[in-house]
Image 1 (cartoon, rainbow over the protein chains, first blue to last red):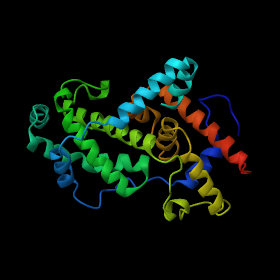
Image 2 (image 1 turned 60 degrees about the vertical axis):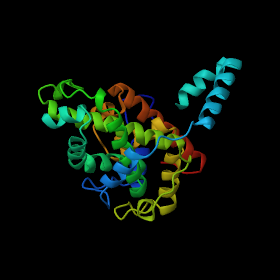
Image 3 (image 1 turned 30 degrees about the horizontal axis):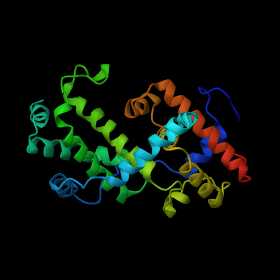
Length: 78
Length: 184
C-alpha cells in the first residue's frame, strides 16, 4: 500500500524486505576470540599520511567552491 | 563502576574486561547492519580500537539517556553501540553500492513460497543500493524490527528522523523494484 505519511509503514514493501533479508539470530557471536586482533590493532603503527584522502578533500572543496548548488546533493548522500 | 573509571584512565586490563563483557553485543549489532560475519568481526575490532582511542572522553557518570541516569555502569553499552554504528556506517559508505548476499540470506528457509528467490535477491540488491544512512535505518527498523527509539539512540538522531529515513528508504525501494517490474 502506497502512503505519503512517514508514520505509516508501506506494508507490501516491508514484507518483501523482511523475506529478502531474515533477521540475524540474537545470539550471534564471533567465530574466534577477537581480543588478539584488537591488541594488534592498538599496537599497530599509525598509518602514513593519507595523501589520497587529502587530495580527495581538496578536490571536493574546489568542487563545492565552484558549484555551491551541489552542496545539498552532497549533504543528502552523507 | 571501578572498571569504567579505570578504563577512562586508559587501564588496559579494564578495557579487556569491558571487551570481554561487550564484544558479543557489539559484534551482533554490527552483524545486523553489514550482514557478513567476517566483515562484522573486522568492524568489531575497529570499533573496540576506536573505543580505546576515545577512552578519555568516556564519562561513566554522564547519562546518555535518562533511562541510564541511575545506572552509570550501563552507560558503556549505548556509548559502544553508537561507536559501532558509526563504524558500520563508515563501512557502508566506503563499500560497493550493491551488497553480495550469502545464499542463506538470498533464500531464507522461512520465506513465503509465493515470493521467488529471484524477487528476494532483487529486493536485497535494491536495499544494498540505498544511500547508507537510509539503508542502516531500514535494516534496523524494518528487517530487525528494532524499536524506533533504540534505532534513534544508536544513530544519534530523533525518533521522527528515524521514521522519516525508513519512510524514504521504503519509498525508494518501491520505486526501484517497480522499475524492475516487481510490484510489492
